[in-house]
Image (spheres, helix red, strand yellow):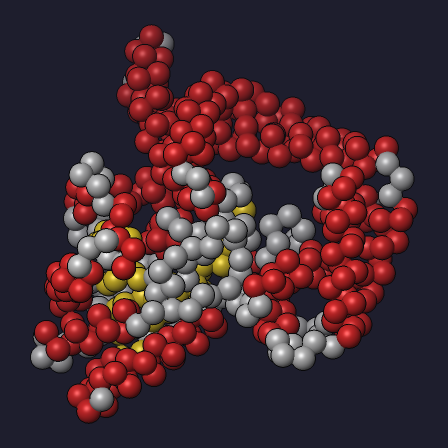
Length: 439
């Protein structure tokens, strides 16, 4: 394990912990070093390896697209256990370049280390709950390592799925699911007889394992339909509307089962499903037109929003939030403006802001805390505790911001005539209960 990886690990874990309010791991690996190739879905670009590395026990080396390895970034990426993978569009001799990288992968596996590979090779610009077609590289690397070590050590491949409620939304949630491992050594005879066939068949098996760890929607154009059913049913992985009595794992299973059910209609779509899709689309278009959210309309319908308690929470958090503004708002604005200007694809924003923010916040606040500690003649440990508390101040600011936004939306809804929308929502609830199975 490289020293910088070890030193930065707790800070990155803290950043991920602050970004997501809940992280759950299912079937977490039991060993730190186990010669396993983890094949992950690539739902949120740079965020995926950060979430997996900081919440699964195994120490990982990451396969990363080569175009991010610049003269400036290469030493840091190397220190973070990242290895470049070359693609046809990178304009280099990919066969020769990747042969070098495959050798490094072999060295890592031979030393009982683990690899994290994203066989899809790319991330959607818009977050969609699906798995794109995967490539054979993960399985091929495993067999290359076995051949290089004369099959003396066991090498495994396993699927890992990141299931976000919404990856770029701060204080959303994520569930990480790990499959059982496949021991590639068990396929030695078949591989030596017909390597191409074995790699093809095992890649198909890995594809199935990866889909089993996530919500996979076959039809990309049904992604919105799937999300809308989750919202109206008050179940699933939507990050704004869900039944708070359900665990994240229960909501994940509902989301998966719903997608699997919808996937059965890929070829022949029943009339009632088409009608439901149209009715949901009409309802959400009406919400968009009046600029309100379904979660707020439901809160009004259930009379579950308590404005007084919301106000009390805002008042209680306000002193800490003011400190959060003092310590964090200026660096936050710098990070936000820089990232959104430099990265045109919004899929990169959440992870880049999180990591860059971690460093900028530290650079900005360490001198302030040192000056305050010396000025007030306090011991070092007081300053250290205060520095750690800054993350709580920032969360207080984020929490107040969310509560104020909700207060404004609810105030708007109270002034509106929502009877038609309420009636539409009630009808949709009943239609979903009639049509969608109880998973």
